[in-house]
Length: 382
Ligand code: NAD
Image (tube, rainbow, N blue to C red; front, top):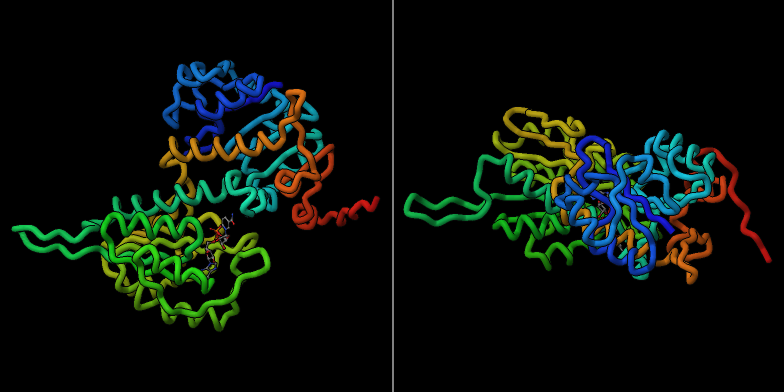
């Protein structure tokens, strides 16, 4: 049984899908680990450290993809899909409801592909939840990015040269990333306000020492996610948020609705009400942005306000993002492990099954099938 760890070639990607601790686990399971040379360099894991853990360094990406199980961070390109043996297994972020050409290519090559985005968010699967582990790191990185771009100090300083007031931070969207953003901003000494459409977040916000902004809330859907709000609710949200946005030195927005464009929480008028030097970090930039005028991976200056739309936040803390992601993958791989030393993508497994997108040459994930315009697969009755 061979596990392949290719280097990630996507722009700004610095993470790696295996680290010494997960490599050691695979070796203990009698799996051979093939790592493309320099795959860990960007994350602070040089080849020597990975070989010490038991990996074998291979010279190119073809050799790292030529394995029974390929572990990646980002999705493979179509050319990389064709390097994975037919019938092989893959675990990675696959953007499975959007990148349909990739999903088609994986099915055509009979690759059993597990998308970490589709791992169920249940207590059983917590250790495998890569969306959460990476959102956690991203929330932290967003606050540091905002602090770095801000011309102000974050904490209150009482000095002989005068008293500096603390910065005021506003966090919009209090999921995993938002909670970490609040905690990080509080640790830096900011006064923090936060808001989410889900009412149960009020208590979480307050337990972190931040104040909850009393704008409209809505019960979540049956999956535990926020629902899209109607135009009237969105208008009310913006009306109440406007004065908090105007007062803020740092705004971090994280609001997302799975499979939908990000909700627009901050309008151009609201940005116009901010003071020069204020900084906005829009973590939803890749799904359309919470802030009007955001552009992915750019800094847009509007009247002295910087609007930053980073899409690579976990990669800005690549060592720990990789450690956490590698642990998520190790836990998933452990569920796939067979007694005879191999591994299988089992559609009946309650964690791996729902996250499997393609299997035995077919697209099997119901939501991916729906967006591809394919018929529903009938449940087998035995
Ligand atoms: P997400 O990235 O999908 O969204 C971020 C936040 O944006 C959410 O809190 C959402 O409520 C909020 N939001 C959406 N529309 C909004 C609007 N119009 N205005 C304000 N806020 C808005 O969220 P996530 O971090 O992936 O978490 C989603 C849910 O899953 C949460 O309920 C979280 O607690 C839950 N979760 C459960 C587990 C588990 O049980 N293992 C693990 C992780 C997350």
